[in-house]
Length: 161
Image 1 (cartoon, rainbow, N blue to C red):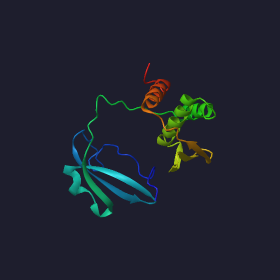
Image 2 (cartoon, rainbow, N blue to C red):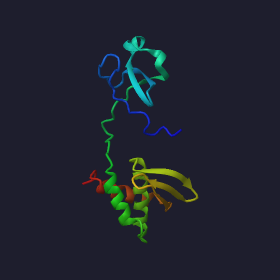
Image 3 (cartoon, one colour):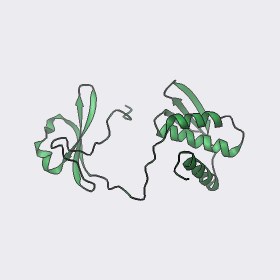
Image 4 (cartoon, rainbow, N blue to C red):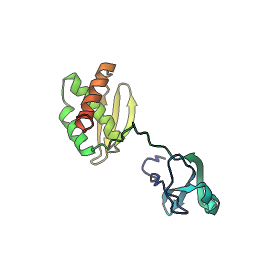
């Protein structure tokens, strides 16, 4: 079963008390089935015994992540990336081919495309919006090319400059 998109992400709020869960706090998380939908419940340690544990399909104890002040989350604009890929996909220039490949990976990461397979020097992806399948060649970038593509992509999405 493909789980991607089937369970909502954590809200970092205790489902029993309604209290926000603090970074670094140890909590319980549980998976429940409500109707036909799977739901994640995050529960503070002090509220764990108050929860109806008979409803849980699975549960695990973990620590709420502490944000890294050096790490910046970047939201990918799938429409912009798809347009960039369309503009670059037919290019015979190596830098553009490398950038197109990385943009394809970003579109998979942004969940606009679904990765069907990878191997033999190619990715097979499906564009979710129109169900078009694409075969994209992995250009096998050297480290210097990876760095150039990273710089270009960060500039395009507005992180550099």
